[in-house]
Structure formats: C-alpha cells, structure tokens
Image 1 (cartoon, rainbow, N blue to C red):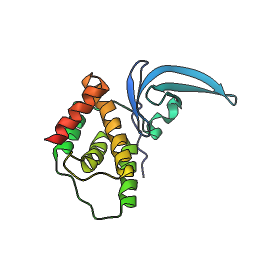
Image 2 (image 1 turned 90 degrees about the vertical axis):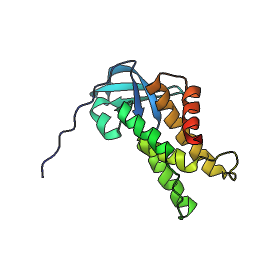
Image 3 (image 1 turned 135 degrees about the vertical axis):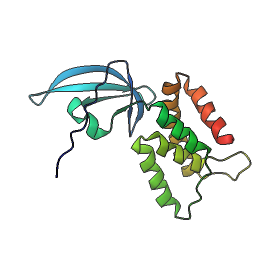
Length: 168
C-alpha cells in the first residue's frame, strides 16, 4: 500500500479560508512560536463573527481540513443543489439532526446547501421546531459567509441571494 502525498496548501496573510467546523475566516498572519521547546510555524486565522482567533500549525493544515474559498464550479454545484426538491426523510429527527450537523461541520458548500434546502420553509408551510430552525440558520449562515466572500458582496446580500434561489 502506497501512501499518497497530499499537496501542500499555501496561504497568505489577508486571504479568506474555510475551517470546516468554524466557517469562513481571514488569515491574519503566519508566525513562528516556541511551544514546549519546539518551534512551530503557525497560521493565525481570525473569525470575526465568532470573535475568535485560531493558531493552526502549518504541518496540520490538511488534516484539520482548512481550505481556500470554493471555486466557481463548486459554488455553482451548491446553487444547483438549492434549486432541487427537498428530500423528505422518514427517520427520527435526532438522527437527521446529527446528519445535518455532520454535513455543516464538513465545510463542504454542496453538503451545507443540502441542509439549507432540506430545512428551508416558505412562509405558507408549517412552522419549524426550535432545533430545526437553529440548524437551518447555522447552515444558512455558513453558506452565506462563503458566498459573500466568493461573490465579493455583503453577508446580507449573500443571504438574500440564497433565499431568492430557494424561493423559486
């Protein structure tokens, strides 16, 4: 069995990146820091929305799933997913909620779009439960933050763009 060498990712200060479990952040700096006698090169990523800063060892970037903002092909695939019919699933809500959380935390915009599509409710459809609404808003927020950076627009404009696609 051969071990595949993953391509090394390079990030620059000021660039937007996606950390799967936290969403879109901005690379603030690439620094060296000595921790327990070992010098580590760290990527410093700020998440303004959560008011959080992560310092990620550059040797761990691919294993934590840090990636660049999606390309046009991936974003178009996410938009196409939003346009498809929601999948009605007959399994217990707790199991579905867990699956939705896993999709959101995967950081994959197409998987997140599936969650948004499946949990989207029009005004004329029955109310959502509190937990459904929480997961829906989390997924919509994650997707909108990536769309806003991708489309170079505000988060509100990105939200509206996604809602317009869903309403059709």
